[in-house]
Image 1 (cartoon, helix red, strand yellow):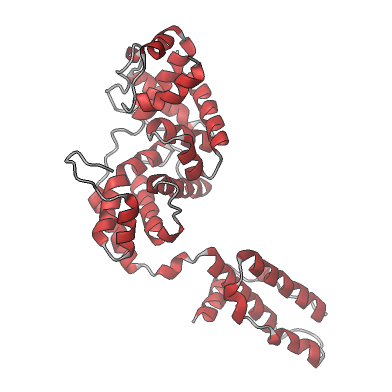
Image 2 (image 1 turned 135 degrees about the vertical axis):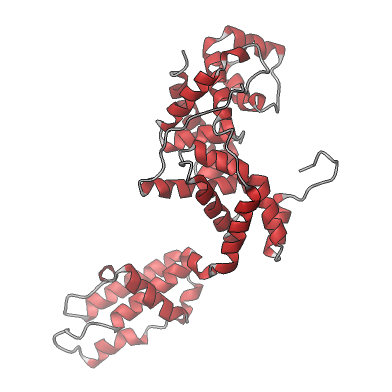
Length: 182
Length: 166
């Protein structure tokens, strides 16, 4: 992953190897690199505000303890999301989570095209509420694609499904969420 | 230009990793369904956008746990199954003393001759087969209602497993 300074930053695989060789700094760097994305995914997928930190910590803990099971054909981040997704699933089973999210972002994400003005805060609120009503896989696939920008292969790897199924879940999610758009 | 092609490209454009071509932008203006999807994808990108994470504190917490929590708490499935198989052996051996008539010497001694040293080399499927063979063995050698692993609560199972890992 090239940096803005022109120096090559270590890859996730290199950091993981360094951690396994005993470098705690490497583990810290991996957390810094992925914590925000993981937390946003967990929150968007239904983790309560007080749960996100605990779930994120547990996900990283399990990741570092289980690095040997990380198959390098998937990115570290998508593997981390798979751990987070499983933790969320356990959380749902225990009757936790599933909160309705609110959004306080006054910014608009899509200012790069002719219809960007259509996106408003009210719409985003509606989408977030709609997300909480989707089946888990639809919600998580949608988030990994729209929020995290993962491709279908990465999503399939993260959620333990196929690329075809991930695509179907995504389109079902979008179809449901489109109904919320006036 | 199809709606599917636009759909596939939307997340990348929303993230600033790609741009619409003039033809795509024109399609977006003309197609109400694509416009609605574009709004959805744009809003999806905003989800939890304001969430702040103290990554350094998170890392410190993770490292503290990694230093202090014993690795044995996260047993791989295969090791857990080995423990379960060991528990099965003990369950066979440590039959409650209320069994009625003693079994013939040949039959009673049979379970004690099970060699568990090779269990570590077995796959999960192999271990499952071993477990099932224990059930079969018990059924064949006992005339009582045999206690099964189901009769052990999780704490008992864990104790038995622990005794085999020492």
